[in-house]
Length: 158
Image 1 (tube, rainbow, N blue to C red):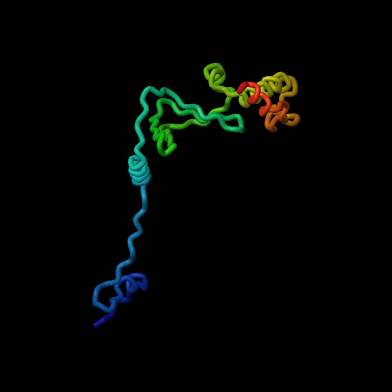
Image 2: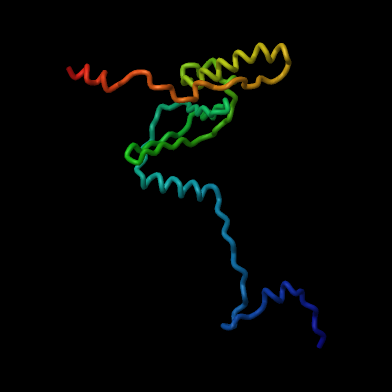
């Protein structure tokens, strides 16, 4: 009788355990994105979120001058849990790409950065270089207290 040479990997898989059954390697179960989404939706359901309809777009403004834009998102909210969720296809765009349509959505800090950007545009066309943020930003600091509000409240009480 001639013995055939076995591959060591096959032999390791065929080794017998104490109970007499073949040793099996542990199967690793990979999670999919849909499983994570289902888990997230289950957690949101436990929080009691409600769908908010009629929202056509959501814009999130970042400090770097970019906008995270959602077109026709699914918006859910739970005021009791202080939770808001926005799901859908997100696009990251520059502030200048969306300018005419989002002027009414800009806050005071975004308007100041927009002014600096507008001032840098003529310099950019002359120099041919990208605009750089110059100078210190005084708007980021907390303003000094000028008035005494305690006296004003006493005057209102009288």
